[in-house]
Figure 1 (cartoon, rainbow, N blue to C red):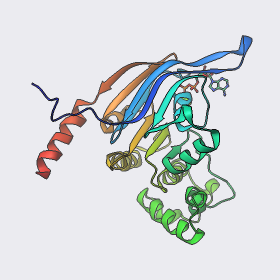
Figure 2 (cartoon, rainbow, N blue to C red):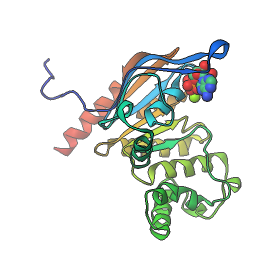
Figure 3 (tube, rainbow, N blue to C red):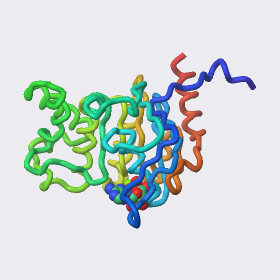
Length: 252
Ligand SMILES: Nc1ncnc2c1ncn2[C@@H]1O[C@H](COP(=O)(O)OP(=O)(O)O)[C@@H](O)[C@H]1O
Ligand SMILES: [Mg+2]
């Protein structure tokens, strides 16, 4: 069957071409990315898997512009990171990228809603508007009751949800998550995945999730397998595709 008309090539959110990243020199030298080729599409939730040390966090860091790289090219939503100056990359990141780190990186002296407000304040929003929007985002992740709590007074799962709210609050196009469900119980984990799935589906968005958690795959459009600094294989989630076909039919 010829699907070429009904299935045009999806536009890329992230296009990584032959990127090399080395840490250290001499005896301590580690080549973390070995000419990696990697793609994430607009409108998709992409899962990235691979053994510890294979370069997943490094790949996400170069895509997010928090780490420089020696060779290769990276386009993120049309911006060519390899051509931008550091200040331009910082500006691009502020507007377009939301992170959920493995260690949640919350600021301990700020309460939850203040932590979630940070990306909005950096973007120039007034404190009052920022806290209002941050509180609304906290409700979405099920933490409406914990707005004033400090990170140390929250459980691991709750801290992670604060980190997720902070990554979503400024409505970035690309959301990058390093093990986002690891500290969550099963019910909360599924709610968060539903939310991230919805976010990925909004126009001109993309969610990339590094995880060992097999439960994530049911929400993913595709899964990229990494090994030893490269992408080894990409799997399509056909069940997800059928879902989408079903919902398209339902809309018509
Ligand atoms: N800041 C760093 N300094 C030195 N080596 C690093 C650094 N970050 C990562 N590495 C090395 O790069 C390789 C890939 O690491 P990483 O991207 O963290 O893997 P993963 O996230 O898949 O576990 C590993 O060998 C790791 O030890
Ligand atoms: Mg990692």
